[in-house]
Length: 110
View 1 (cartoon, rainbow, N blue to C red):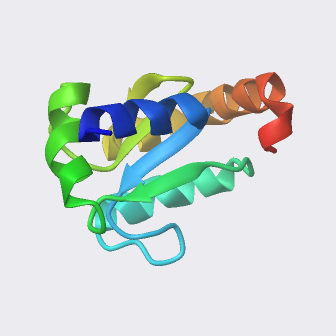
View 2: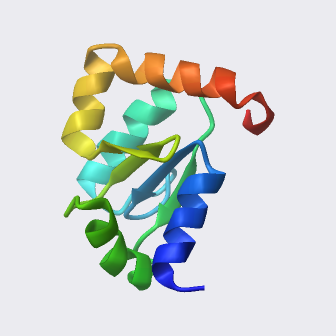
């Protein structure tokens, strides 16, 4: 399986997935840390991929997503955005609403 196929499979199998540097418990950059904090505050499970452990994904995802930076939040196969967008959505209550709706559609993953 090539890298793009792997990315498509990860995005397809996980209703909410965050591509980040490090892990939710040990983020390796400030932007990933802020994004994870906002997402975790919504109290819904999410998948993550540590791009530092997967240089192939780190190289290919920005081209696939047409989004140059990390972290990247994907919800139901759609790119939501990076740190600034995640924080802005969280502050306006939109992230909570999006993740609540997604969790209701995918109860088996909860």
